[in-house]
Image (tube, rainbow, N blue to C red; front, side, top):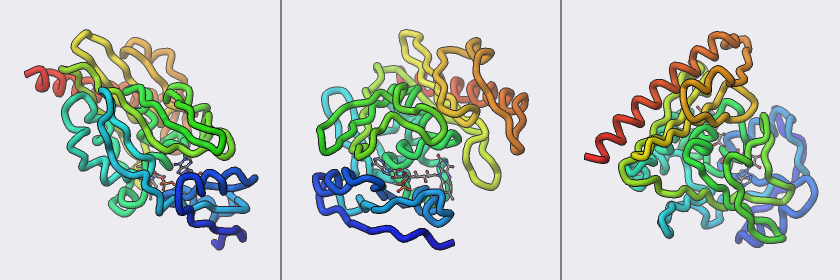
Length: 266
Ligand SMILES: Cc1cc2nc3c(=O)[nH]c(=O)nc-3n(C[C@H](O)[C@H](O)[C@H](O)COP(=O)(O)OP(=O)(O)OC[C@H]3O[C@@H](n4cnc5c(N)ncnc54)[C@H](O)[C@@H]3O)c2cc1C
């Protein structure tokens, strides 16, 4: 299908993008992997599309015990990033490596993936398990939103109109921690029927993020909390089967995270 008419602006700087996004009915365009299908189906009908593609917002930097990942960093770059291997951050690279196909991973970005907040997307599980923070800018200034407050329901986030995710911040877990992301995917789309990210620390702390089973990612601290998990069913996986899948992916993610933690503590 052909999108409804819209104006197109290729932003030349972050300030230029934020000014343009301050207009009513303006939408940011990053990799376009989610936005373009929505425009073509006319589910989205923005007046103005602001292309972020020329902005310098890609890459991973270390800063004061944390990593800052630029919002335009692609899944492919994340899947190959040395900074994310070992050190308790493998869940991010696991997740990025399993998204869609190579074309999607070459275009799709971490900022777009989080802002889109698809309830079956992979990264939201990792975001809540690892306690990621989203750095958000608008024409009015900057704020930081913890992942646990960011996802508010299917395709709904804490972003206000005109706000842009500029980076994702992740604190380096304590030495000897391990993390992993595991999903059971829909065979056609690759999206998670159920996906789990687990982080275990040497002090015995456990954080598990779960995606694909409800409207927003859930955070639990052990398998015993899964009885309280709200799970929906659809024609691909009924409620009972999805609950079973959630248990399976949580167990697998915990096993992988623990074995990585053991290896890293040597
Ligand atoms: C064939 C296919 C298979 C896929 N498989 C998977 C999968 O297995 N797992 C998975 O998790 N995902 C999957 N995806 C989804 C994919 O990961 C997302 O489409 C992609 O990450 C979105 O990022 P983008 O840069 O393309 O965003 P865009 O499509 O450009 O934008 C998406 C939304 O986010 C907004 N946005 C973009 N960047 C920002 C920003 N920096 N700040 C604020 N808002 C912003 C846009 O305005 C838009 O509303 C798949 C997609 C396709 C097409």
